[in-house]
Amino acid sequence: AKREALLLKLGYPADYTAPRYDCEKCHDTGYVGTDMCECMKKKLVLAGYASSGLGKLMTTQNFDNFDLSYYKGETVGVMRANLKAMREYAESFDPTTSKNLLLTGGTGLGKTHLSTAVARRVIDRGYDVYYTGAVAMFSDFEHQRFGQGLTETSIADTDRYFTCDLLILDDLGTEMANQFTATCLYTVINERINRRLPTIVNTNLMSKELQARYDDRIFSRLIGEFRTLVFGGTDVRRQKLSK
Image: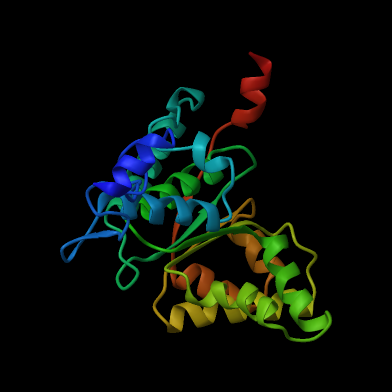
């Protein structure tokens, strides 16, 4: 009573010294009893978005705004099937049972859009997703190998390729092909296969081009251990610009 009187005398509310919680349900502990609070779940999802490597793509690309009207003829049926397959993949994703996916086809046909949509939904469901371009991945390994030596940061940068629940590797085939990048690619793919952790690979290269670019060890795993979804049609980005 004395404290309240003093606070009021000094011009403060009587409950000025009482704790203020962002979440009144859990009092900012993250848990209501033994159950995780909704506020904690939202924070974890936002943290997943921030660490996924997707950036602004996460806010603009999802399953609902994938527009099939840009595809004509027989391609519509193929792309509708691809959309259905990737939506089901995201909804049923489990790092212990989900398969690897290889998305092939020309530029601007929706591979990045749908793989981003998968990443967003899988993160929403509480899994660790890392989305990166092939050039960026090889740059991380190059820095670790040829930089200033191993550091905790450089180890962490490359360790995630082997440990995340779902790795999405975009634009495979745009990197400079040499023995170093081939070794890195084989190591990542083979290690994740051995650990039974799923990977989604996007590439503009078709089967024959993949075989010509990569050695038999890599090609065999991409074809034998991945489910291939072929994307067809006319570059959607160009279609949008022409409207």
